[in-house]
Length: 255
View 1 (tube, rainbow, N blue to C red):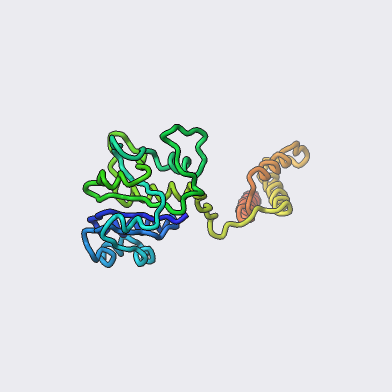
View 2 (cartoon, rainbow, N blue to C red; view 1 turned 120 degrees about the vertical axis):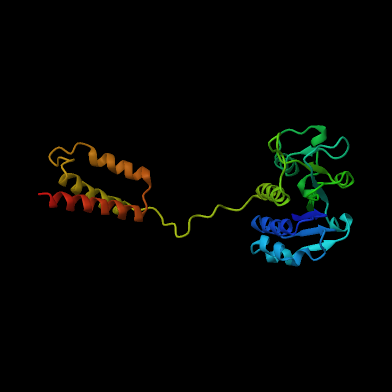
């Protein structure tokens, strides 16, 4: 689904750069600025520095004079407003609204009925100025007012932080990105490697007097089960065999 983030009358260049960075992290790149304080905000040094490499998002960002221009082509509009209005669209948390929008909510009241996602070709998220937030007349143009659940005693969020949270929730609702495995992560040790470790460790335990070879009982089978549950990697096998080797050498040196 086409996704656009719209910043209205932003006053701090750093927030524009940080917003670009937040969007790129979540895989979005459609940002529109409505009447920002500085006409050259996209080229300001602070903007570029705070973008931290998201220059491609800044390059695509458009500056327009009115909200109507920014909303061109957007079929579902979400305001971001901490304070519910007496009049206007319903106020919901991002996750609650996205569940309704994507048909994942189990229950719906009359005020919660929204168009199904299939009927929505594009979605826009509106963010007001740092000093005043969103104007009532802009909120009234939206289908919903998203309110991030925050500490009731302190709900002040930086513009870029609020945008990051909404972008994250929307990305999560769309399916999210897979969590990357650690670089160079190896597979599990095979049965032969575990057997080699057990043989080496058995020798070490005999050398230090912990295991009586004439009456081993179930020590080694229990260790075998322990290592199977541990899902050892080849590197971990190597470390444990190094420990076994040191045990043997130390015990023999003391004789």
